[in-house]
Image (tube, rainbow, N blue to C red; front, side):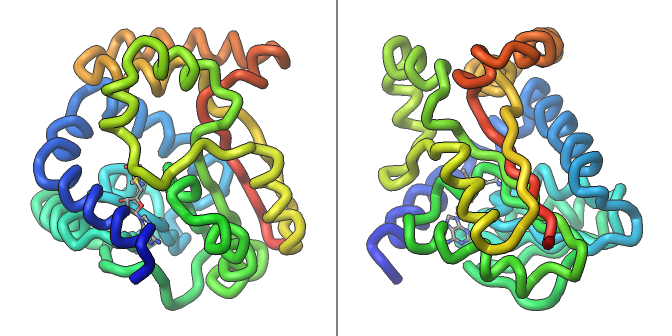
Length: 247
Ligand SMILES: C[S@@+](CC[C@H](N)C(=O)[O-])C[C@H]1O[C@@H](n2cnc3c(N)ncnc32)[C@H](O)[C@@H]1O
């Protein structure tokens, strides 16, 4: 295993040993996940007949919300602790069409592939080679969706100034914010029709800071929908989405 992968594994094994489970179960984070699932369904066109692969699925909380709306979800993650939690939650909730595998690679073909807060954890060579790899995992006409922190985000600047300890706690040593357009370009070069857009401004950072405050999240999400109409504010938005279709 490479040094970066070892460090990712060590960080996430610790994160998924209790903190993530508690944090992700809080109402604002659940509301953010529910919003994200609606977004994924709308943008990928995934429906009850679709097979969906999730890269870097963590404890599978997004995937278990997605499962009732699609045919099948397969999640993969480097962390064995995360996979154990995802499997246990799927069993507890009686969700039979979601399965989870520990690892860094997938088999089979999928109608949609999602990667939620995953690409920015990949070292540059792996990130650069991922789009070509995705072509082997997607059926003709299949879609890819990703969400990652933007290098230009205002919330990053504010967070580093006001809550540097918290920012560090939430981040691995090797992850970094990504440039939205440069990342999208990797997908275009691999022959994907690709759209890059900003997902949020303050709502997801607020859910991270105040995970118990669901009504605050919902209000911030509505404010985001207004703010993101401004091109100037979009440039300083927090997280960007890539939606790619096999051309
Ligand atoms: C920021 S977390 C996101 C997890 C989840 N998608 C979420 O939204 O909570 C990144 C995840 O990617 C996993 N990961 C990092 N590098 C990986 C790799 N090369 N292959 C598979 N999983 C990886 C980590 O174990 C971690 O669970």
